[in-house]
Length: 636
Image 1 (cartoon, rainbow, N blue to C red):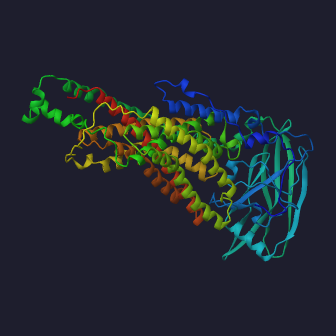
Image 2: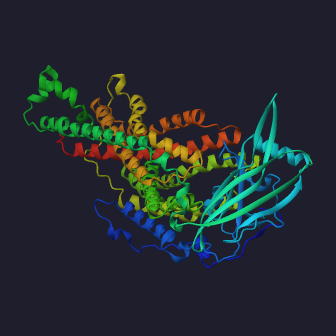
């Protein structure tokens, strides 16, 4: 992507680079030997595939060793890499460092260690002309001296006026600095001051770099044609901080471990206790009373229904869910779409668990692009779950066109993500931003989908329809659908859908604030324990809410619980998107077409994934609950 003068940095290359880019994949010959009745085969196989991926990331020697050894001898060159520059208020509006007229090296040398995740996130590391030697201080060094042409001076003034920042890397440690500052002199006069000196303070422990700090100083007014001297200095000091802990300085402990974070977890936990108690009350009291009435063999209870006696009245009022036993397991409308959504939801549930599992093995923020790479790999491996779940459910509901179901399952979420990605890529290309994903990277992602994700989805669908596609409903399905009686407006499916996401959103919205802040405000998210607890709480709250709403819906003799339970839980994502909109206008200072498109594009894809995940959770929990209650009644 560079000019002919751009070359690749080939010094210190190691054999482990081969394993870094091409991690081997090992398949278990028969993973289903380890499955149990409590662990479905799809989940068992997916976990084994995730473990293989984890081994590829952590245990394989070639994948585990650093691309660079991170060890130096005295006097050895320590490379300072330039990355990007852009307005501070717009995280996704970034450009190459040398898009501004900084001192350029004689030859552009690009890092040869760019992985898939780095390319997706817009990293472009180019060796800077700043010469640094390990443990060798330098009081003053000249980078270059240049006279700014009118166009170059205007570029710097625009960057300073819009608070441009830049990012550098030294031994994989990020460094940030501001281009300059604006000084107001009154009478609407401003001076655009450019920082011309970079003071680098480095700390070492043994033969490793532990810490690097940048101080920008010596501001000079940007004037056309005025010579500007760009200089730097380097200082070294010893430290007791270990290499493993060197990234801790970038973590915002007071922010992420604030008392409000703990309070939100406690508040969500109390909500879980309340909802579990409510569901338990339904199961123990209401259902137990219903079962007692249904088991009466004396026909007087049913005769009392028409005469208005107490027992019959209560049966008609409280036990309407038995009346729809012949329709409650009727296949939902748009069966192919519903099966694909349920299958994709199963996959996303497993994907989040897999990402959290890998986060416990390592730390995403220590290596550039690791989180994105892990997401793509885990998504591909967990595609088997989507196919198995969708294929099994589709076949159990007498579906005939399983190939259509398989294609829709494989393309549903990737199709949404790719559509939004192409639109955002078009905008980024128009702005010549680093947020633009190169064509080669897009081809790599497509190849992963074609040769890994799609075949696993096909295999899962094939096994699901053959091994898990036999109908096993507790009740027979009537040939003629039952007429749904009139009911109060608050029992209607739209109301259930609208209100079903309120409590799940209430259990996670505080964590959404921390996640949004870390993503859009240059913070590293590291509290995976909090995230795991919130995820478990979300699962429990979502299932409990949908069970309760579906129970009251069936009591109103409305058997359309499948889509209702899915959409009711999925409505959580609608509230998250509304909160994201509020966050954009009230908590950020983002502006411009590019940043606005990227913000709402990313949030839309995130909310679609969250909606499918929560919808699947709601449907799974409600399905288990309904099958349980109908299995324990006697039906004539």
